[in-house]
Length: 573
Image 1 (spheres, rainbow, N blue to C red):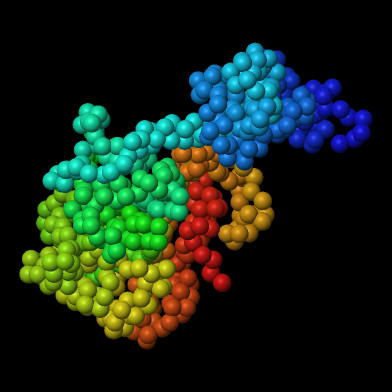
Image 2 (tube, one colour):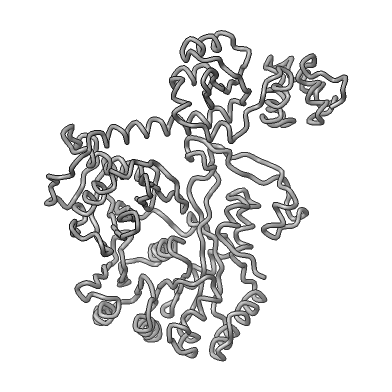
């Protein structure tokens, strides 16, 4: 900035020109537009796409001589400080308390010249306001996040207030009803806390709840769209009550604290029924609880909504309509394998076909299909169930997962004797799935004969539709996922973060796939006991799209982001 340029004596447009955010011709164009709309010049420049809100706030802070608030200052503010200013006042005046000292209160404001609001803050807090400038988008995002935390913390404090000894729980009920009309004012505080955790998880579409003891607190995290997020941190004194309550609900031994335990229970809300799988593990700070939430209310996915691109959808539908053979889907836990197979069963299901599934657990209940739940404790294993199913005259069989040589042997024999078999395997990619079957103990000539299709998949988070925005990617960012600038036509997209997506920028997930239809060439490679690299090279020559490439396509079409593809896939070296 030149020595003779003083932004406090300049107009916003002149400052933006000086810092190379707009040209003089763009300013003149915006001024003409302003005469028609009668809006502030800054808003006109944003609407015309000439500047970002952040650029305008930078210029505004230079003009007024105030500091500009950054993301960290606002989004990482202490909720105790934020709560000094009541939420109603903060929202109506677009102000947010972010830092506090003995005599001053740092306040982020959209309009730092709002003298009436500043005077009200002085009277309200008895502190001297230190003003920083923030844009309406960032300010609104911070308010949603921070006042949400304050509200939730108040609920937790109310729930755990007065907890001393946990006794007198009713362990006869097998179902927990979370609907508001069923709540009792006399419920023990720890019961309210457990209900609060479950309600929050269900409301946010979580698949898992982690209750993790730390040295001085308990972390409660929920997994939303595959990523864990902290929702509350009750004190460590609440851990014993939480564990006891969940053990009672799950019919587990409340006296046993040294060994892992597994259980289950059901919960009911006003809109859905959910099956909860419970796992308890002793740690150095106490017992850790992980709850898996399975929605039993119905399965509403299909192959198109899962994310199959059109060129793969036709191939996949053709394969799953074959009269016999095996379709194997691979990926880590939580990658949507079972969901894909359920969607496949919906396509081929009709009254002429006998479809049976063997699962652990049964994740969705489908009409017109016989579903069997494995119970290892009583000897109802995959192996014993599959041998019995063979006498049930099945046409199509879904095996939840191939974990050992016995299950693999039965699955292969089913597929070679006129049955269509769907199953899953834990493997990193599609070529690795074939070698995984060989590692389990299936002979190469059997693997080559029975397989119709092998497919690996991952889930990537969708950009939130409410806060989706365009941006210009850097060359370095594109290089991280192997894209060249010339391959990107236009801008990419990302989520700014809003209340709808818990300020993550993402809401919902979509699958990406790596598919190998078993051609004669691929079968011969398997017969010859080819290694994983040879299978991958042959599949790539025949048009196999890798998981990284599939993810890149979803970045380019605006469905997901570079960060998500990097999180979910690996680069082939």
